Image 1 (cartoon, helix red, strand yellow):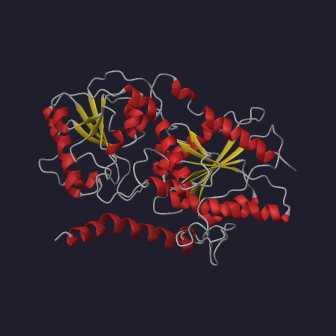
Image 2 (spheres, helix red, strand yellow):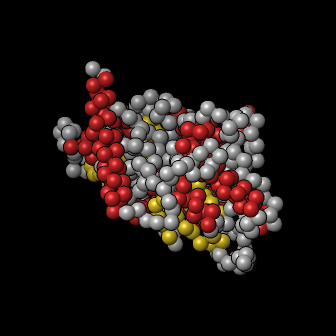
Image 3 (cartoon, helix red, strand yellow):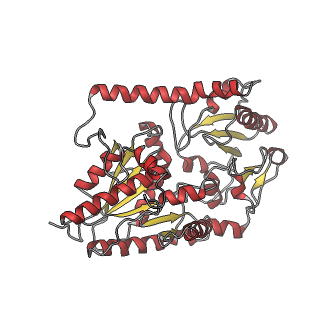
Length: 450
């Protein structure tokens, strides 16, 4: 029996890391809050894609976003679950290749249901980016093409996204301007003691020399300003992974730092919003935390010490007024952001943010109505065996899917929990992978530099 319109809207979020789970769940809550006003709210089910960055319970607790249920799955297991009991809306908070694989799998599932006459509504599929898009723009975007809604976090991103799709002859109507869903918090007020926070990133910069340089400059800033508290905000603990791989954790580098750590310098974890509640100056290379900070009007510095380069992502902040060096910060400089740049990035704290998700809500509402009436268009990604025969099969095979989106032979079953042996093998494989990333890979890199 079809669900009544008064039933809660059912939303599923599939994420592959702690930060993407945060983005996906918060985005879901924002875009469906008014999508079916006559219903009794919405129910959120969470799925964590099994892989190298699957978040730990500690990371999930730190994110602080709750769901009615949350479990770990493979792509094939998720697709089988959607085939059995599809929700109204699916939010794919994944890396591009995983988005493309799930889109093809969902296209196959919904087409099979149509051909067999099964009375099922196709879910509305939404995807996007967790933060600043500064690399692999075309690749990442085309891997996300095929979703009903591709969210852009700013006006600038929306323009760039449409240009890429239109440039290859793909339908760009899915691109929808929104904003980062986790902006907010109390406007900035000075604190005592004055607190400087460095927002660390797992993979930027990459080299030990550059990461050690940043750590040394932070500790020197703390010694130069003993009346200030200097915090190094870390994303994960050694052995944990987040959206990007961290081969050289600052925790380990700090143990080898000449002169040790000054008494007013600390390494901290926790929810970024709570850390920003006590921040007087946010310093970073290119973290999305800079946008959260700017939204609150906290003085924010994007470092130029290692250059302004695409590889670092700080080139995204050209024109922002926030670029600065440690020498300037040591001397007391506070960057002043450019208001026009802020407006184009969707972070202006002038009330406009409260309406930032209106367009996405309207689009999802319309798509839900189309789905209910059976007139929603089939999922049709740009990449197919016609447009990318040499690329697409490999993307799908990584997630145990055949070129037509069906499960490959030997793909894991979704209707039974893994046995004890399979669980032990998974834990051992993850441990070996993390050991390889954090211990073996840096050694191999150093040997290659000899």
